[in-house]
Amino acid sequence: MCALPADLESLRCVVYGAEIDPGPGVVQALRDAGARLGLTSATMDGAALFALKRLAAGSPAQAVDLGNATNVRVATRKLAKALGGMDVAVLVAGAGLTRDAVAAVLAIAERELVRAPHPRLFLLGGEALGAAPSAFPRVPTHMLSGADSIAALRGLLLEDAAR
Figure (cartoon, rainbow, N blue to C red):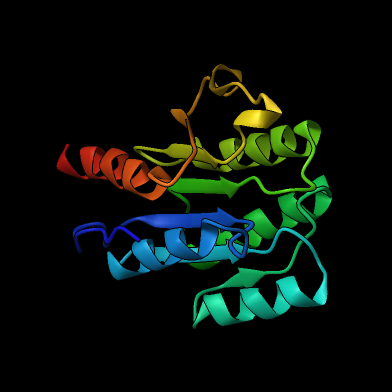
């Protein structure tokens, strides 16, 4: 796991599917950097809910089925309100998420992110689903994969913090 320097303290980030690998590493790296986090599960099954509760550690969290756009929309609004807005959204695209579900989650996040001064939208592990970053033109969107996805996320966020 890559640690982020503690200069991202004003960052308000929602991690969708936080319990799916590499989600726990992303959550920990952002938490270590001082970011304010909101988390969702990817599913409503017992294991996901237990993992979400453990990962939340005091952060606002919403149990959702990422395949249900209404659930995602409501959770996004609740988390953004709890955080005082939303600057970054990270979707961990794991097994079971369809291309349509990924597109819906990213579109919902994008609608909330357009209010942020320097928004970022990240899709981790979704390359096989074919979601195109160009489909979300109002918010810089990045597809990251592999063992270095947390490091790549860190680098992009640090670029923003340096501005």
